[in-house]
Length: 121
Image (tube, rainbow, N blue to C red; front, side, top):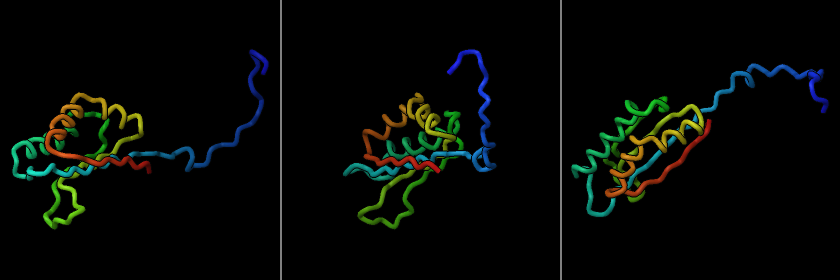
């Protein structure tokens, strides 16, 4: 390629779908309480309230839902869930490193195990 010369190659204009393509990430976390710990435990209630407050403390969160299982307990049921929407994977990465999120992880670590999935759509 020659230095200092503008390219004369024509690029096709992007389609409207290509130009407007918005990718978001749905971050889903399912928490299962450790043996001997139930949802009435003060630590569980505190962790749940703290998780619910992420939306007020972490700017990268576009939408946020949290809640306990509605009571139809099955062997495969989780006890608590978090569902968040982020603009992209970079926003999720910033969220994961945010001090408010890290404090939440510490609260859940002593009382639960969890599974995470991030869906791009």
